[in-house]
Length: 290
Length: 283
Image (cartoon, rainbow over all chains, first blue to last red; front, side):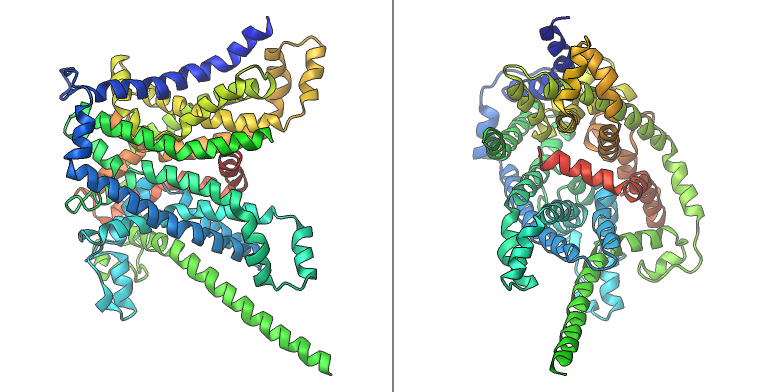
């Protein structure tokens, strides 16, 4: 068998499946987004860019869901990155029991978003939830809040659940990055008289740029696509106070059967995915050729 | 004398420092464990004891809650088990196959094709849901195991191929070359040389896929209806918010659904960590 035939045999199965399911379907979604297709039986008529024009000019819920996606992303990343770095440094100090703490920090990663949602819905429930119960138990009952039943606090509650579930990932990547710092470098800093604190602040943490880029990309990617957590905790409510792009897309396409319009939201999400990932891929390719 | 006091001084300082670090670690551990504690606690409470709230420690544990929860979700557990096992096996095998190709048969354009393939992992699934539902329906696989297995396999390929390519990159090219000199085709080399050496790779990739597919919700929500082939995550989602199950039963069900992956995490933490790092840092 010639090398060329063998190459094709190795790469075709994957390329065909991904070509169809990812790229073919995305193109198909784009085609649907140019129609007014609604309801399962019909196919809809070509309407050009009408769906997109409507999304960006008139749809207030879409705008809300864009803003909420951004807010959730900012809170989620703003907490997860410093928290992960901080916990990784604590673990790196090599105290007894480190293994157990590491396992505890990674444990929530094993939960599905569905399980987290089910647990945190109940945690944040104002009457029977554990958070208010804990506050009352330690005499801070006056701080009890309406949590997910309030349109002002619900998005914040989701962000907390999200941080709980996913921050172990950033701890893990930073921990690997910090352990990867060559011992000669920390030794040299020690000889120069740097205290432990200075060593981390001046030497080790500044070396974590690659880890930060990795974490940032994965967190951005997940905060765009996260669906289960929001759908099950609040269903986008109260009102549209926690509606994000993924729940808006799902509701539009599969609850209201407005496939054309929902497809347009899907394409907007596709474009955002590409915008997130392109800078990282460009950087990766550059470093590969260096 | 002087030296001695400074030494004991630094020792007390060390102890203070250590206590501060332990305190911080414990606060973090509390944040991660408190929800799990209250969930386990509540899952064991009888309906009467629920009234005392979720924080107070359970007095007479009601293990039958787990049986009740199990009877609500036994079929979905089985569905998830079959779908996850089969999809993990197929997507890992295809990942090894393709990963070997991209690693050991470099050709013009291979790095571009590889990039396009891996990019598939990063695209939000919402942009393909509508065609996915239509396509799976049109080939008669709506509400079936094979519909979900096919979907999970296809969306697993970018990451499994990436993981295996990285794994085979660490395999010296000479090993492949020497087999080639002995007259082996690339395909022969894959089966005789690479595959037997890739067991550690399979361990990492299959655990990675197992946890992902077991925990997946959105595809299951769209591609199934009713308990026949519904995955466990969807069943747990349905349990929530219904009046069929009170909170103790819901928490028991939730914990049952988490258990397989939790066990994998506790026993194979090293492999999990490896998979997560390989899939992201080198990605």
